[in-house]
Image (cartoon, rainbow, N blue to C red; front, side, top):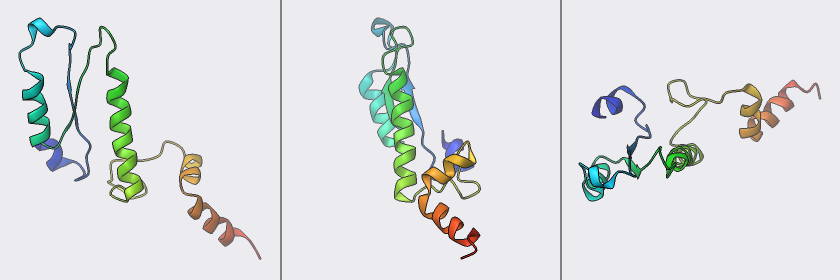
Length: 111
C-alpha cells in the first residue's frame, strides 16, 4: 500500500476489502482492527462476502463516488496526463465538460 502511494497519483483512492464476511467463525482480524488500520492509513474500508454478495457492489460504488467527488472538487483532473483518471470516450468528455464544449464550438464558428 505504501508503494502504491509512492508510485501513483497523490490522490489515489484505495479501498481495503475484508473478504469472506460470511465466515465469521474463521475470522483472523476483527472488524475493529481492520477499521483502525484503514483509518490510520487513510483507506476506505468495507467487509464483503462474494458468497452472499454483501457489499461487493457497494465497494465499487463507494470507490467510484470518492473518485467523482475528487474530480468535482478539483483534486483530480481527468484531462491532466498522469492523473490516473481518464474518460473512456471523447463524447463523454464533451458531456462532462459543457463549458469546454461551448468554448470549442464558439472557436469553430465562423461568426
